[in-house]
Length: 463
Image (tube, rainbow, N blue to C red; front, side, top):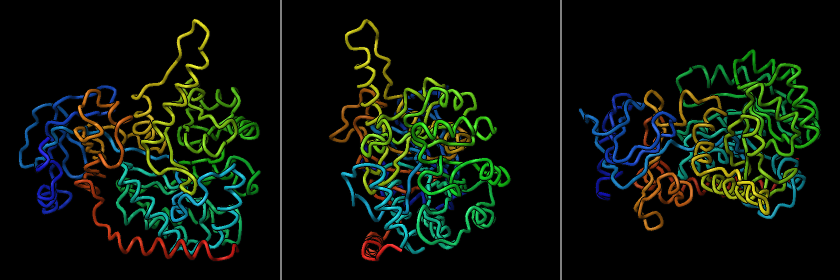
């Protein structure tokens, strides 16, 4: 690897001298993990970006007037896609690392700290989450923003996504507890008109809801009325807290009502019945798994439902969930799911003549990229390094101490790498991390904002 050229400051300077829509970048000499089923893995290959779009992938591409980035010794992959994260909570990171169960999380965070959040706290938490996502290679993040107490709270969350340059999905929901304006879901119309009035932008809008009325009452529970709101607005739906028997019954009701489908994502999907999975598979409903959340918090069976999803013909996306108790990166989600599923598969076959049905590193990278994009309704936009898609990509150093020598590129990304190995992150062709550093962030000012918000939230009595 030519460390003096690959994602160097000089290259970045040449890139930024050109207007974004006139920019041309050619990455050369890389191992390219496209995650496109037709393109596969390309060795010693090039990738061309024009403006915000990938225009070509292959060997010996013509550089033309492109800024050439020598990517020898690196692996290029699609950016990771987070399908569900409660970003507003981020200044409360790890306040309860050994949380006992869902109830403890709900009462501490949603019934307690959430009730005192101001719009500026929404902004700071969401901004910190998005910048952390970019740093660890997540180029698309669905923010399940379920603390929209006023229109200003929603605006702050959306503007934080805008200001970081991430490909963001704002999934809006009213809060579980405490006083709020009851503006949701009606305020979705205003949000769409103000922030989401173009199909060719980084941000998209979804409606967020809960599976049942057990936690926060019927107003937040998905059903025909909320489905009608989403349909009238032409937006997708993300449904959280999909667990166990009551959610299984709800799924069957949604199927009967005709409100399941590819534009609906069920989050967790833990401990569901075979009938519920059958209905989900038959309707093309998408699933967002949260491997560390299910296992660490102990949601329902505490086992991420990857086998159940695959048996129903659903290839799931992956998600981070809550940083009050969990990690913030996609590498951990992939490794956790890979280890748990393979443990279960071997355990189930132990002492028999059956061969364990193991998932692979390719599977979990597919879940973290292409399937995550499909789950978020963005499969035509991102998730693979396919010509015509937006240039959301990672440059991963394969010759760093913890990765060399490069033998299997997918294994290196999934099992060997972490945020320190990500030399560059592009979102829509725009460099957001370069030479190992997130760009355009005043870390001192951000740290001051985060600490001030944390102190306010933790020291203000619940409303």
